[in-house]
Image 1 (cartoon, one colour):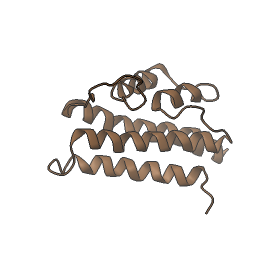
Image 2 (spheres, helix red, strand yellow):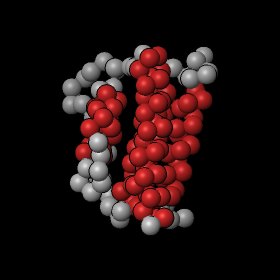
Image 3 (cartoon, rainbow, N blue to C red):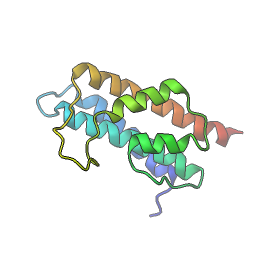
Image 4 (spheres, rainbow, N blue to C red):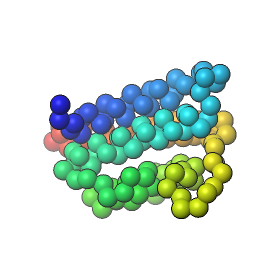
Length: 132
């Protein structure tokens, strides 16, 4: 099966829903896991925009992908501020050993709210153009 932009869009929505539901099950899902699932949601949604525009991102972090999106879609400053906030917790690509930076409960709620913003942003980039 060929994986087109719609495949990654749908995956992004599913990961987002999983992240939102997981905060109701704190005994099974800690904040680090919720953050990772939320990040997968955002990355997949961003990837769907790239693929819709027949592009591939050069970077695979949320921050890197968002900066690349600025090359061909309009991204407002507040949106990028939230991307930077979320990126603070990413330590996967560090060349130095770092203790994990795990979001607290308030920060997790902020990240989960941002998923809704990313969904709306993605819809504007894809479905607005499809309808035209």
